Length: 204
Image (cartoon, rainbow, N blue to C red; front, side):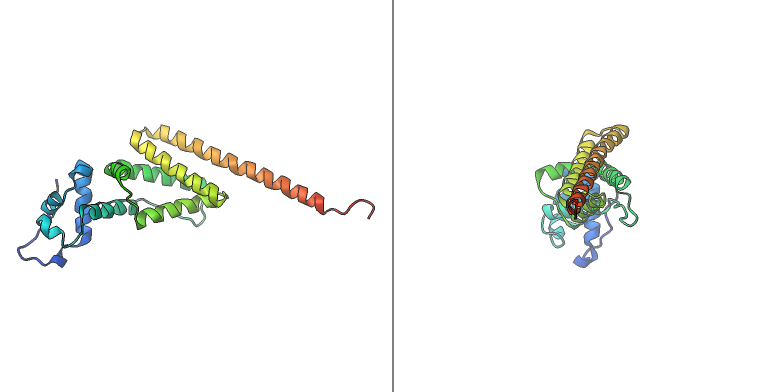
């Protein structure tokens, strides 16, 4: 267990930064799960009273929101320049699964209350952009992105072995590629029909 952050008597409120509070909260959560996060324990970890902690954060819920957004923000995002969408999706799914395995309290917290924040929003928007880079329509890309997130969460909950996770994700993306191929064939057939319609009738 890490030592409390050194504090001195009469230390001004500004001396304790929000980042310190959030990191201490994440440590508590990683050690003991969501039930371990109380303002009293968090204050003790920081070397201050729970009452003093309220000068910096409004409530336990706010601390949990900040902790959740911090770990979402630590999840790597694939570069979009020169992107190959399939490896990028596989990497993002694995990064999400790994993050949830490192911080299993987040899974439990997400089932109780919404914990969306700026970092989660950036993650989801980036994942959607990767799906759209495959050539999917906006609607299909949204469904594909949600499927990837759902799969990664399920794999983390089940603590499934990595080879099984890889096989499942590859199969999911096989379905996405099949959908793209079917749409390409349909678009090609539609274009061929349109060209036939544009031909002048024989004899003219």
